[in-house]
Length: 167
Image (cartoon, rainbow, N blue to C red; front, side):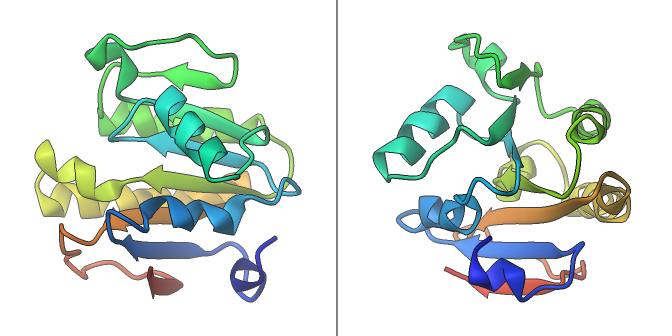
């Protein structure tokens, strides 16, 4: 596990504010395969993200994806390690995440890439309620929440995170 994550008391909830050119660098935090990763893709197809991460030398063989983009973009390339959802329906997304997460034994990381994308469909109070509910439920499946936020969409600080990091 990356030293930064090792220093946090589990379960934790981490907000990473990234710039467009540093966004993929956030994945270096979860590149070590000793802890499984569930990645919720909210703004690019999972297959594209996998290719981009592999080009940066970040392995994805310990990742499982929940892809909320490919079906709408008609770019679905069925992958065994990916669950496809039609859209960003927060109820369905939360249920799928908790169900899939409970099937993975032991501690795990859940990466949301990127929560700032939700602003195109939901108002900030709705997003905050969703994230707050997830923060309450992720410990039940032994998961840490890692929320990526692209900095050009400033975060409204109505939520508590274990740590906030600027990349």
